[in-house]
Amino acid sequence: MENGLLCASAPGKINLYLKVTGKRPDGYHELESLFLPLAGVADDIAVDCDALPGAITVGCSDIMLPGGTNNIAGKAAELWAKKCGHVPHWDINIVKNIPVAAGMGGGSSDAAAVLKLLNGNYGDPLSSKELAEAALELGADVPYFLEPQAAIMSGIGEVASPLEFEVPAMNILLLSPQFPVTAAEGYRLMLPEKISAMDENLRKDILSALQTNDPEKLGKLIFNDLQPGVFNKYPILEMLAGEISANGALSVQMTGSGPTLFALFGDRKTMLQAQETLQGKHSDFRVFTA
Ligand code: ATP
Image (cartoon, rainbow, N blue to C red; front, side, top):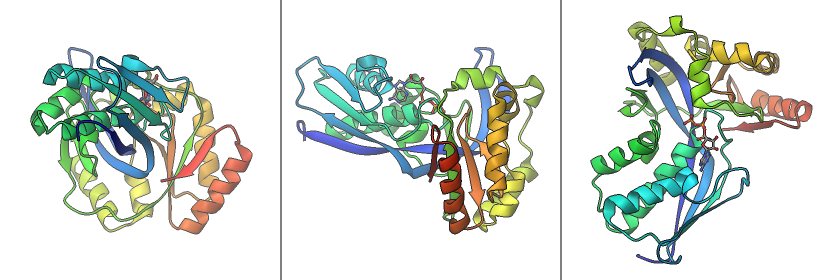
């Protein structure tokens, strides 16, 4: 189908653990992180292929986000057109459900969805390797979202080792305070002494707790190296984490560079009660389940 409307759901992610393992001379940090995609927290992407030749427009339900090729979804379309020698004619529309600049990879996921939609629609001119290379030009996390699945990501976040088992359903509550923390800020605030190799035994223990569906054990093992620095700058996050714990969470942690917090619960009923209480108390923040 060359014309018509292409649609996709672009999921967010959480970082179950995040270890910063190094810093490259170009300033990028190397990491090891267990990414879990959240199909229930997703942006809706539509690409209308009947736009005027030469056009790439981006409309978004979040009016604070940039339009056209300043939006990462528009950038993705522009890059794909350039690589494939295709004249663009696309009006992109995004219904934003993933909180913005919140450590959930929303922009990266939107970009990956656009790359996949266009490549699929025009007969896959880019191989999956070429598509992954194009994705990496847009951002370190974009390749992940070409095939979002539970995976340990390494490198600067672009090398995927998918888990060899199916992740059991978990009770995950998220709280997104409505202020942005960019990835750059999260890394800038990181205490340099955090940089070290991932402990292999810890990785094994985390994977085993995940596979055996033991949220209590899992909650005690997971960590995020970016969290102390971000919590230090934004003390409200530590306060909120305390409140979520007081409402029955087994563990509370920041995802990515924050500020979104995710909490593991032992059962759904306690999680939903906590959601109601916390949302009632913090009407300015978004409290939602994965
Ligand atoms: P990551 O965890 O990959 O760093 P994030 O979830 O913290 O990502 P995003 O929501 O992807 O952050 O947004 C990062 C910045 O990108 C925002 O400040 C926003 O202005 C810009 N941006 C451009 N296009 C988009 C888009 N489609 N969705 C979200 N942000 C976008």
